[in-house]
Image (cartoon, rainbow, N blue to C red; front, top):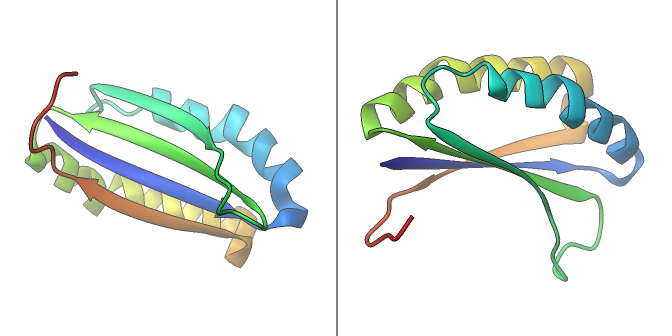
Length: 104
């Protein structure tokens, strides 16, 4: 199992537009990913977040190779689409999660 966490940070005045994008475009793109075994698309709630909004996409792959292939192709495409629509108003932060122990 190999996991990738992608956090999308949206500035305050783009939240409504981002929420619509998440529900339609982003969700559909994730549904169409063939190499993703499981995923969780979530709103992030945190006392530490004072401005804007975070959305997280947790992707589970069968192995590291599939995750690496996703990073090289699909994530690049995803970032390009988001950048074209939102520019600097939505930032994308991928994080590799390498489980040490699990009960999943």
